[in-house]
Length: 257
Image 1 (tube, rainbow, N blue to C red):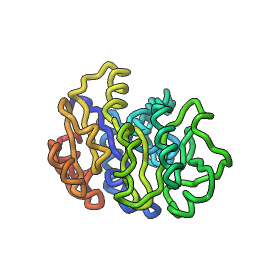
Image 2 (cartoon, helix red, strand yellow):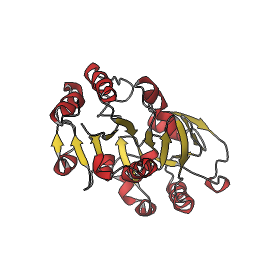
Image 3 (cartoon, rainbow, N blue to C red):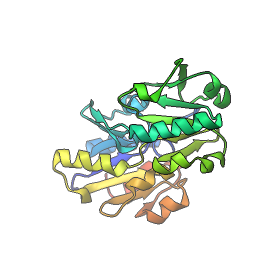
Image 4 (cartoon, rainbow, N blue to C red):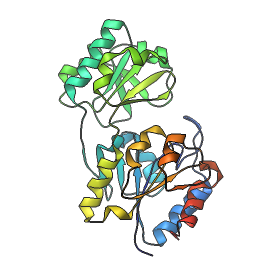
């Protein structure tokens, strides 16, 4: 069949289980092998930083990736670039957190470690998603680029923060929110433009709110069975759950191998 360009979210799509206990279903691994054999282009499309996603990229044999919520692009194993957040917007978030005594942290480079000005963020979150290092005197004004910010609070505290109205953010864990890019379609288009490929040949797979940005008209959208309702409403096809052969079943249904 005609070559397709497939983009897969990680958590809840390629990977089953919660944070700290994730695994890739065997049927998903088999599907990826058959897709490659059929000549399709495969890429990850994740909100994770490029550094945080490299493990899955290597484990599953991907060479291409949209990372950092759409703002990072990796092609043929080479990171082309990561577009940072608007620095002044992040500074306003940090300033409001300081004024209200809310712990915060920053991602100022492409690594698996975030930085916080003191131990309060770690003490509040006890996070297993990524490591937090204390950088005394941490000040967003001192960095040229800021890729993500984190605000430690329980719902609905985030709705009282005026500064969040100017930044993309989401809650994936109960202990804190992520201030991070949320436009996976932006990164997908960059990759398609790099190859001069037609957007109509894109197929995206996702399950969560941060996948809504790539569930747009113009290409094929596959929602996992465990996906949120808002994503299923936009989907062209709804497959089974991630841990019930969802990726494999979708590929069969779409005639991809």
